[in-house]
Amino acid sequence: MFNKVSSRPGYEAAEQLFPALGDGALTKEHLAQLRKTFRDAPESILINRPVVVWAWNMSKEDLDFIKRMLPAAKFVTDMLKLPGTVDYKKEGIEEPEICFLSGDTSPQEDISFFSYYLNFEFLHIYGEEGKTWLRGYMATEDRKKRLAMAEELHFKTLINGEVIPMAANTYAAIAKKPWAFNYSKFYATNFVWRITRN
Image 1 (cartoon, rainbow, N blue to C red):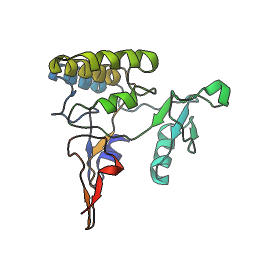
Image 2: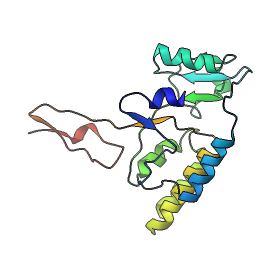
Image 3: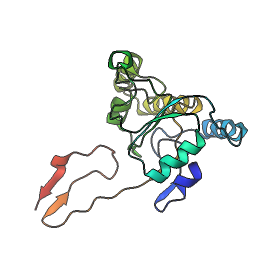
Image 4: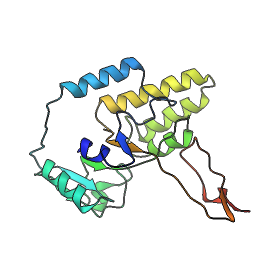
């Protein structure tokens, strides 16, 4: 699956959530440990037991490919909720064990990234524990210490297999005059009111 996605035009293989030279990127030691973990994993793993997989916003070709990789899985393709934001029992929804998502990251420290992803089951911690971590992160004035906290959270998320990056790609936005974007080139979160008419 990884090779299939990363070989598309505009995509490249990804080992981590943040750009390699960005804030919160893995240290050389952590990256080596992560690579060893994946290198030592069996070449091909098929989950031959029933698991619930949330997969949406996928082409039919990609979905068919994943279904061949996970032959016993039950696929949910019309779910518009995020894991961790659902009272599964109350809503009568089966909790997913695997969820395919895409999201934005940034080469620079971005509190909105953590605020968003700590709200659902995406990073190593979430919920109340995630809120506590975020408060501590925002209260830490020393940038080096904050980035070390971000890197540690990033590493734990990846080494525990809670998120497995498949590919990364850049994106661009185009505006026709008289409209202009005043978007940051470095932050993942941009708002519609930053579009102006000149």
